[in-house]
Amino acid sequence: MNARRVRDVPASSDFEAFTCACRLAVADPEVLEPALADLKAFLARVDEACSRFRPDSELSRLERDGGGQAGPLLAGLVRTALEVAERSGGDVTPTLGNELADLGYGPSPGGRSPSPASAQPLVAERILPSESWRGVRIDDGVLTLPPEVSLDLGATAKAAAADLAARELHERFGTSVLVSLGGDLATGGPDAWEVFVQDLPDDPSTQVRLSGGWAMATSSTQKRRWRSGSLELHHILDPRTSLPAPPVWRSVSVAAPDCVSANMASTAAIVRGERALPWLRGLGYPAWLVRDDGRVLEINGWPAGLTPAG
Picture 1: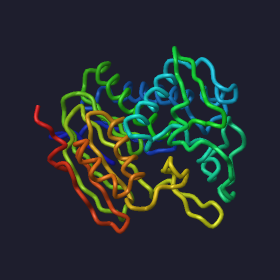
Picture 2 (picture 1 turned 90 degrees about the vertical axis):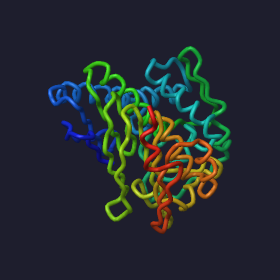
Picture 3 (picture 1 turned 30 degrees about the horizontal axis):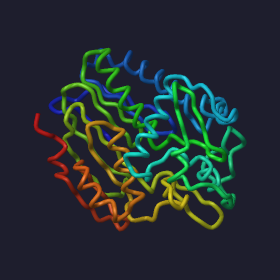
């Protein structure tokens, strides 16, 4: 997703974080450089706290130790992930680390050597992630993990980081800001933004007006793909099967008052397939869904619903 402020072209800078294309845009060009430095420093702290791909991250160390005292940032990110699991009815869970590693995506739990992308999925007897998240606890900052459970916060930490960063940068520099981290976009301040929404270059596209303070998330089955044996897989797993969600939607974009909510809705929609439609309508968030064959479905007032009254 690309964005510009309504009425004016904002100052912006593109960079990479979490292996994603990212962008910071600000209404006041004079604050771009210090705001960008603050954003990069914050994202580095997020990566150090919760990356599954770093053996030296705080999360990797705690998993090797079987749990323990977590710092405030990691503890907050784990709490957010558990809240999203509850809100999504177990469709978006943080306990898919082992399952992703079994399928050859990223390193093995605890920071061991990366699983080769061509490896066959491992067979393991575990509680399904749709239920195992209920055994994760974060009490007074102490992380407790059930046996045979490994966390992957990728479904929520990036969205939470976008929300936190947009709010902090707006308050610190007193200007409207937009923070885009891959498919997760959050804004702070009163200005509205023009957002261009497209997953892959040949996919359908749309441009919408997003009210200041609102957020948007796009979940995709197309970008993070790899092969495991004879299978081509994507990274959004159904927690009830531990396998990639069936290819009903190529991508789902959702607008909401915060990026965590938007990401929860877009990711759960991928997992639910056709069952997502009545659920999304019930949430009331404007959504733009691209079917596997390229057909587009707009619900809950997309795009007009992205600019709620007041």
